[in-house]
Structure formats: structure tokens, C-alpha cells
Length: 358
Image (tube, rainbow, N blue to C red; front, side, top):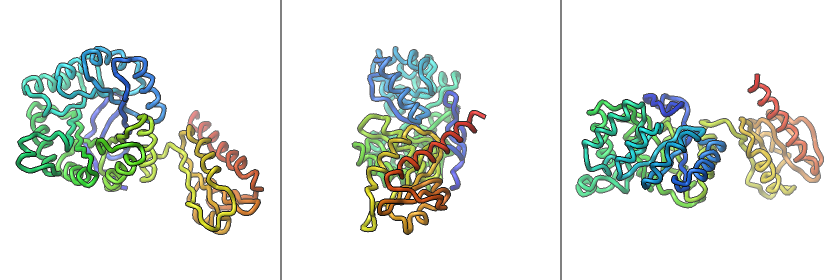
């Protein structure tokens, strides 16, 4: 898959942009002023695979807590700023890696210029966050809520940034409607070379939000568009990271996870496969290394269907087969299938850890 090449933007100890890796993000849902709870959630997100975490700066207490959070965080922190530009100034002075702004929410252009000047001096990145639901009224009144309207707003804000010689910019054009987001991001990728932050905003609860996010973001990622991504779900944000990893993995853009291949079952199924799939998924959930595991219900064509898997099993009546790299290595009694599969998974995992240490 050919990635769209964008300029590289430094965010803390990371870079967003270029033409390779898609950086995974999420956002805390704790009260930022509750420093211990916020740090706990940041660590949970980081351990799950988030490389950048955003926190909301809603009031003075949040703003005053940010510095301690930055100091304790294992990853770069983004400060989410809306209507109070002083919070942006404080965040930059506190050493935040990036701030998220909707410039349309800042009425005083002189203060916006001050923010850009300070961010430039401190090396702070800024994301221009355009949402379909909060476009400038003059644009909406004349053109409605469309991908063209979103681009008009983005051009307006990018011009302000560039007129002030600020280029350490990431841009996003989020919408709640997947087709609208696809259109807007395609237009942005064609016009700007700034890194694109992908997302479907307010996507909904876990199941619906996952489907909507994948519908909107998979086409863009497949076309090589997008440098960083957040899946927005109404649930524990750790679930956002899990979904994000699986989406990227399905497109060949994330490999540091165990990928389980399992058939949907049919009338040929001769053993209780679903509990085994759940057990292996639970067993491997914390194994952060690239491995494809196939669990199939038919010994007749199972190995052929999973020939690209690293390891796997295919069940039968009272017995099954264990295979590796698409080749059958032995027949196994049904009661030993799971233990044998875990054993070979452990072998690959231990080899991976050994090679990583070397």
C-alpha cells in the first residue's frame, strides 16, 4: 500500500507524517484536574498501544493540573482547548507536546497570533480541528454543511497559520457522517501536505461507533491517506485503542498484535469452536507481537483456508490437526487441541522476546 507522503511534524519524542507509520491516539475521559486518575488512564491507554494521549482543558483547575500530568506521562500529551485561549498559552508554557484548537472559537486574532508565536518558539505542534458541526456561520449560511464548506474553513485557518509563519501543523476534518468525512479528507489530502489526523467524531457507542468509524476511515487508510488516528467511542477509551489496532492490522498498517483468523462456522462444524476462539483471544490479548493464529472448524479444507496463518488448528470429530505455515504437523486429540495450540504460540512468543532482547 502506497502511503501519501506528508511533512513530518514533531510531537514530543514522536513524528507525525511522512509516508509510513500511522500513529494511534486516544483521549482520556477522566476529569483532568483529577491528576492521579488521569495519569492512571493515560498509562492504561499507553500500555494498550496509544502513542499520543489527549486531555481536556475545561477550566482553571484542569489548566493548573496539566504540568504535573505532562511530567508523569509515558507519552506525549495533547491539550484539548476550545474557547479560552489563555489555556492554550498556559499549556504551551507548561511544555505540552501539542494543542488542539478550533481557531474559529478564538475571537481575538491578536491572541491567536500570540499563541502561534509562542508555539513556534517552544516547538509545540498545533492541530487545527475542523468539525462538521462547528463550522463558521458565514460559510454554513452560504454553502451548508458539506465537504467544500469544511475545506473553506480549513483554508481560512491554515492561511492564518501560514501568514504567521507557523507550519508545525496537523489538520483534521471530522464529521459524524462517514461519507462526508471521506469526501473532506480526500479533498484535504489533495490540497495540503500537512499530516492528517483521521477520525469520525461522535461515532457512538462501542459497536455502532466501531462500524461507523471503520466505514469512514478504512477507505481513506486503504488509499494511503492519514498519518494519525483516533477512534471515538462512547465507552472506556482503552476500547478505542483496541479497535484502532484491529482496524490498522486488517489493512496491514499495524503488526504488533496477535491476529486470530476463525471461520464463521457452518454445518460441517464437528466440535465446539466458539469457546476455543474466545479462550485463545483471551490468552493472547496481552501478547504484543506479530502472529496470525487460525482456528477453523473443518479439517477438510481448514489448512487451505488459513495457509497464510503462522499457526493454527482445525477441528474434527474427536480429533483435529495442528498446522504451521499452512502445513499439517500432526493430528491431535480434541481435548488436547487448545493446549497444543497454546504451546506453539508460546514458542513463537518466546522466540520474539529473545530476538528483541538481542
